[in-house]
Length: 121
Image 1 (spheres, rainbow, N blue to C red):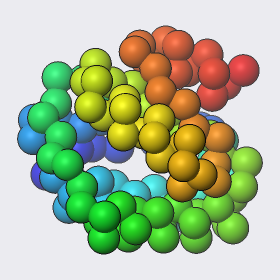
Image 2 (image 1 turned 135 degrees about the horizontal axis):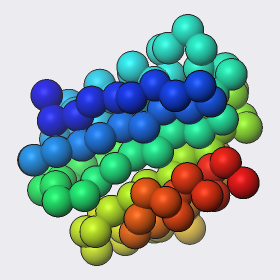
Image 3 (image 1 turned 120 degrees about the horizontal axis):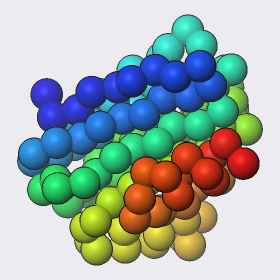
Image 4 (image 1 turned 180 degrees about the vertical axis):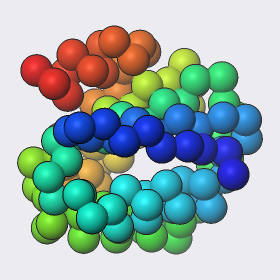
């Protein structure tokens, strides 16, 4: 498993390490959206620093989107922040936002501190 989740009072922080696969991404989404407190969460911050993400196929992206769509109906207020130093990850997330594939407020940051300032503020 190339991720861990730290639960906070109002949110969750997902830390990805090493090579990040589709299984890591989908399992982390299942754990967050399936959490008993999901409807009360205000944010999810996904940390992709010093990782080697594997590109997701179109069908894998659809599966992640389906989980997030269900999450949107359970908790439309939640914010998703991504922290990455990888240009490919940043571009993929920003493309998803531009293409309307994300229903939740979603942004990409270079630092954890900037992500926290946005999700809390």
